[in-house]
Image (cartoon, rainbow, N blue to C red; front, side, top):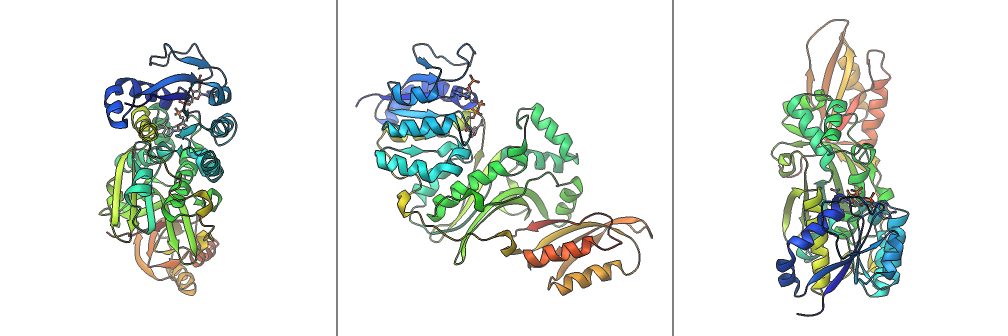
Length: 432
Ligand SMILES: NC(=O)c1ccc[n+]([C@@H]2O[C@H](COP(=O)([O-])OP(=O)(O)OC[C@H]3O[C@@H](n4cnc5c(N)ncnc54)[C@H](OP(=O)(O)O)[C@@H]3O)[C@@H](O)[C@H]2O)c1
């Protein structure tokens, strides 16, 4: 067996402590698979006195992660602190500069600085690995970069945020409101005290930007992702979705077209028969479409100490075994710069929910607005009949242009008989 691979771990929170436990408990198995032993030599976090539920005896403690990145006795620097800027970024840059391999679970960092870090890693002749940054324990980075390397991938979609999927699943199953279920998710530790990154779709957008770059061989472009979160999804929407044979999921969707790359994160109605519809609770899933392989579906736990440590460990084992290669599948300089498509270019069926005063002629006015925008109706559901009072009307359309839909919604929203601004949601049929 060749020399031991020495690892320094920055950040000993959920993932860091999980990794320490995993590397200790799976020591023999990992050594056999990597062909050499992996040994933690140094760790860094803010509070040295905190009990982290893992054995840190014999490890060198660093108060400063940047110092550890350059001064520790380590071949690999594992960054498990988080955040796109500040200490996590500085420490990764310092480690690469010092010729050390870098493994990170930090999607924000990779989404914003992945190209620059990949370039630095190539220049230094070391590996930058980030399996845990997307979909936690699911080995989706490896699957796309290696397992699907013989394919042109034209599109992918996924449930990339377990917190949102838990909230939407629970709202559907219990009929409870968003705020109520969010509070429960926070109590259960599924959602952060500041849940914005999750529920506003930012976290999913970070992951989607990474997947799109890897799958399509293009430069990572987080700013090009159109993002909407789940705050506006109501129990009524979930109920109506069921009535039209759908479930609501927060999806990240990336498509490679002749005109450029389209990346979007927003709530979507998907047919109950689509593989992604059966992914419930905190689970994540990614569906890719390759020209030779067709669709592939990967599902599993997207967060938590065990699943995330599992993914980080896989990266460290790859490095120990000498399996490296460019972070995004091709050299950073070969990643293509492509045009990005705005949300206005989206074409697909829509769901529209609106509260209107129940009086003759209102529906005729609404359908006239839709007709003028070349939008054709598929279905209309009206709840009850109460002349002069507000009733909820749900419309579904055939394929329409987003731009036309937005224009129609503005006009419908301005009608006197429309009580509240209409709420729209995109419907994706996929292959179901
Ligand atoms: N949690 C998950 O399920 C999950 C899943 C996928 C990816 N990730 C990613 O993994 C990374 C870590 O997440 P986490 O959930 O483990 O976070 P966490 O529980 O908040 O832990 C963060 C750790 O970083 C340490 N830290 C903070 N500032 C530091 C500094 N200036 N110098 C050194 N250490 C510092 C903290 O030290 P103290 O403990 O002393 O305060 C803590 O140990 C993030 O990038 C996250 O996005 C997490």
